[in-house]
Image (cartoon, rainbow, N blue to C red; front, side, top):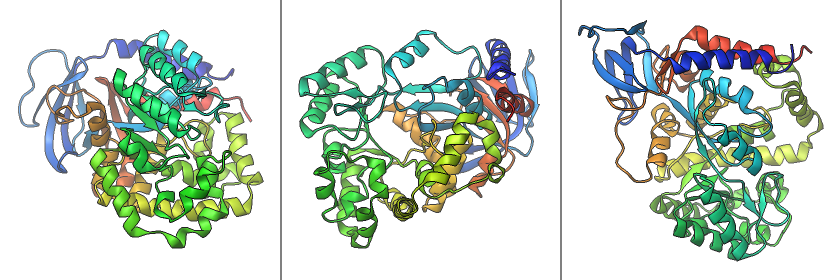
Length: 465
């Protein structure tokens, strides 16, 4: 079968059902309120017109009228999950990413940069025909000349930066993405212009600056912990700044950084954390991406069943990454990853906000949808409780989107009907987010059979090996 044909057939068919979503009652469910960790047991949650219409005790009779009844007795209902760092719209990835997001309970994504033309073309088409996550759109990455990424935009002067900010804000992007190679003067011009026109700046810490510099400039997120660990090691930022070819991923494999980890300055790191917390700078660690790059070493497709849901060419690249990787670089990166993981727990305890993100694109061993479950498990390994880890993909994204406005409870009458039905209580074990028994996205109920069809459609769309 030609690639994507089956997946797209299911996608469009589901889209017809999506447009005709009927009112639904989830009967007898245990409602998990992530705001305070309270579980409201044996409730009936009624969904209508894309929102939660009512929550009532299971014993209370349902009002007359058409209503699809779903027996959810003994199951647990959480807010829908958000992956807050993806690249889902490059090279047509949304055709297989979108079904895998919904099938894994990911009802919203933050696209942290794609090609300008293809991103504009995708958005111009309007809402997708089938099941799709909500999307927060980041601009192409603003970077040095030439940009490190093929999708990046070069900023050669402060005025060029200001012009690009105005252009991208006018095109309706939700934030300006900044990248590794920006000079201090060009970065400052971008930050000032973004503040003037009212669009957030988010992304990497440019390697000529520091995390406290970007926090004071008003940057709203730091992706992949760029320079957050390095700033805790005396002298590290000095040698990074003088290397014009440096990039944030390459730093992790650099033996100089790995060798300097024993000079970690806890007091300096605590001071940095206070600045980040007070400025409200969200961290998007993407631990699953870093682990995939330096730690995971599958050399046989049988080791990882999820490879069946990855395009053959991407699968081959991932296996080649393991086969051709340099042992010393992997060893260095693994050491840095281990220290970054512990740092995430330290940041959390210092009051720095964490957002769960995966960098799902074509990054090695980052599977769209289920990689978010991996990330939540890694956050628990880093020291977060299961409740706090779940918040990084539910409550914290809602706070991010609210931008300081009052936030209503995520599961309450009037709230968006974006929900995940789980077999067991995830507050006892975060791994339970993997056992999904239904998803509600924008008010539409997807049964286990619907979700299985989405997954089967993706798997069946690849050419036979």
